Image (cartoon, rainbow, N blue to C red; front, side, top):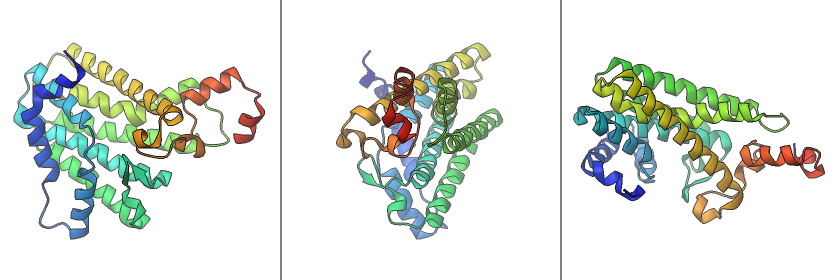
Length: 257
């Protein structure tokens, strides 16, 4: 089975997820609606909701409830990107201008908060207390990883262990939750749930490491943002760590750090 064939297994349910992502509340301010259209219209790969649906399908979960969790996971991911872009001062993502390019920091933060709340609402529609607990724990992990990244910036020495802890919290935690969500929803055995969580976590770690490498070697069109953004922000990633281990006293590195 090829990589491209996996989404085809849950294509119809992905369509239902997409409809939930585009659903709007008549009570919301029109500016929030415009922002949501911009964010959802960015059309990412929908990798995380696909993982939720595949997990649910594999474990025999109720797919009517799984689509809500899948949409919630994508909304949560979207909210983290809104805050990430503001914190990093990023003006482009996937070749599209970020929300903070045109909006004030306050408006951007509040919109991100709204998307977080929307994600929590969608998750609640699955009517599963354990999943809501996992959802909250994952959000705490993501925030913890983001704070760690802020305090491990330029001027600080970061070990491989600290780097892995950061990307496990900031990136891998949500992918791990996506992978185990279907098992939780289906009431699967703990062994199966843990196996899916481990798979998702390792997939998430690999995903972030590849992204960190691409920041050095990809072109801007492929990356969807300026190349070398992490380095310019003083963010220590695995490629830089490996270089520091090989050339700890390199004058350019010492000056940059």
